[in-house]
Length: 549
Image 1 (tube, rainbow, N blue to C red):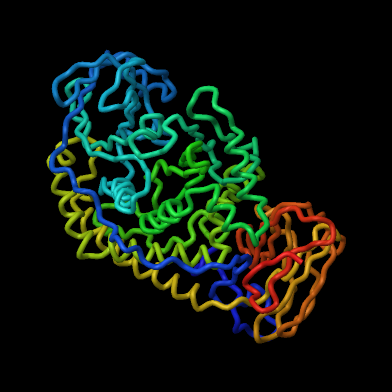
Image 2 (image 1 turned 135 degrees about the horizontal axis):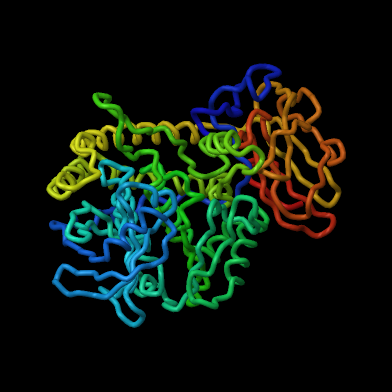
């Protein structure tokens, strides 16, 4: 779903309109709790100083062992020698890292020192090739943005990599999320438990689909408990909407996460389900932190081998609310997978992102942070000079290395500056549209105990319910089941679960969809279990806010 590509409900709709006929303006307002948007930060976001040299790391490995990695991408760790910039030699083991990146001509590597040995406080090094982005800048800019905003995230440093005397090119030495990471980034509990989301997951939901997803895993310590993670996921998914902001603030480093979402929006971070990102439970604060990983899956990347003579332009129109029920790229990704493997996959998006963007107070707080990030980090006055400086830093190595698309690398500064301009304009338009939006047809009340749902027309013109879908599964919403009615402005329609052919669980999620697509939501509510006799309803005076009656 998105502001541009998907039709949305608005306050001004044609008489007896259907979802397919709605204007392309925002239509989702589902849930809210009282609150106000944060004001712009008193301290400006400032990029960390840019390195001025590329240090060289060299690996020496038996050529026969090196060839094994070409023949079998899953070859286990092999013995090698790492020579650090000071000339010191270290016995190490190395293997390929990544998923699809293992098939790239320019490989990414994991290098591990023996247990008990460390290099700059680290035992394991992640050396990323960045092959799929000819600018070699976007992933680095993402991590630098997080550093500028004060978010605990991996440090990313450019290096030169040489293997068996042959220059491989510019690499990104990316700090691993492990116990030293906790020590380096100010966590109170430096023995905290680190969890990593499974493949095709990172959805922040309590369950996973074994046909195409993998479960969360405890990354460290080796025998750490999953219970803090499970407790957090329960809070995230089942807290009643009126208490959601308070519960999330108590259990989660929310401000940092909103800044991560701002970075996601600026670099158009996509395919988050495959990022294998982390969450950390800090027993000292009692809160969970999200730590992003794998920022190379961005729509902005300058993919190598664009046809000669064709000037490439980055895709700057990924919807504002990334990896959520409101991201139409979720639909596109699902449809692409459905063509290749029918019936295997479902739409993949984050429940956390969706609940944040459903909540008007949190949504506005996120947009205020995004505005500050754009003003402080994403203007020509700030970013043009940094782009030029990075390009000059990398050029001597990149242009001398194999696997560099020279024309695209040289075009990188122009490409990124144009993307920055177009992305900023698009995001500002998206925010203005959301802020001007008024709700139309909405979920008005939900009584899971008695098994009924109410719809209400909050708009100014009558609306038809023809073809709509109400579903308790937000990832399966294409079976049209809402009876056709015409609702006048202010009119309410009560529907029973038997009329809709569904069973309302005591806790879960409920969505109202247009029936046109798997992620084309009109309204949605995540709800928790209530005592008998109570139900959820929009407030009479402030219908954007949910309350319990």
